[in-house]
Image (cartoon, protein in one colour):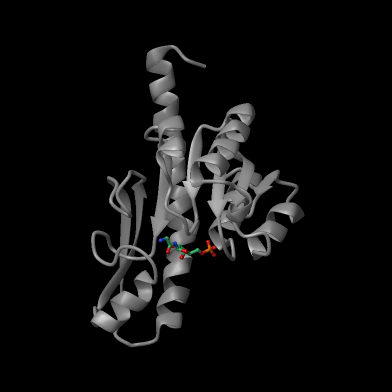
Length: 198
Ligand code: GAR
């Protein structure tokens, strides 16, 4: 069974989808750590309710990004994390985290990348007037929302209500994230077998 860390900053509906897929046996994995940079975020209570260990911090309590990321890495290494899933974690990740988990950090973004990177992607897409929206899951690299794409799913919407796009998109996100994690965990298994690791 593989171990996941989920990073989130807000509602945590993707965190819930992943944690529930693990608990229900849909994913052969466990969420061993939830990391959150907003002590009051709803995701914190969701993790507590599920008995999932959390690292909740206020970035202002650390001298630098590298310091709180180093603490997250220390905890993830102690828990044997195989895959790091960013799920609405609204911070740019630095080399400290990336170097600790090369090719093992993924992110979900509410647009069809490379369109509409960064914050407020749905609002950006609505104000542009696109008719096809979508969700992207990608590897995280030093470029904002710029890493290699792993999975995408598009949907049509001919309106101008960002809330509606969020609603449609989030249902798609939950399923796409769980399916994509399942595939990546299989690949990790195959890699480990071919290199003789356990
Ligand atoms: C999700 O829609 C995710 O795609 C988005 O934040 C939301 C978090 O929702 N991520 C980004 O915008 C990253 N740039 P959740 O907390 O309910 O999972």
